[in-house]
Amino acid sequence: MQVDEYLGKQGGPVLTVKPGDTMAEAARRFSEPVGGKKYSCAVVVDDDGRVLGMLSLGDITWFVGRLEERAPKLEVRNMMTEDLVSCGRKELLEEVLGRMADRGIRHVPVVEDGKLIGLVARREALEFLYKWAKVDAENLTEWLFTSHARY
Image (cartoon, rainbow, N blue to C red):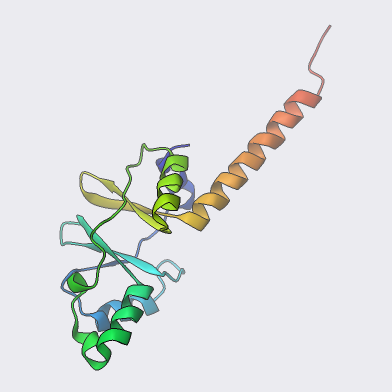
């Protein structure tokens, strides 16, 4: 199954922040649900929507613990993860999940022409594949065990 099929069913708004935002501004964005959902990570994008990095709540916590009162003024560009795993809409979702497992990550931005078009979240993607496989198995079972023969 391709990533764009997942995005068509599970895709939605993605929390984004800018590299020049302060930690305080980014933390405020995390506290405001996007599309009714709370997020544990944000994609760092420039003004043109190009993906530059990822920022997680864990990153913010680590910097607060390390820098204490100086942390809120730190810019996102100094906290974000730049070594990203990303994917395209035509890649197989199963392969993307394999790369996520190999790297121990839970979120992968979907990028087209360098710009953000969505996000694959591990838990939601696994639930999506499970439901898809279950429906597929139920359809196959019905087809196999329902008599369609005329002879």
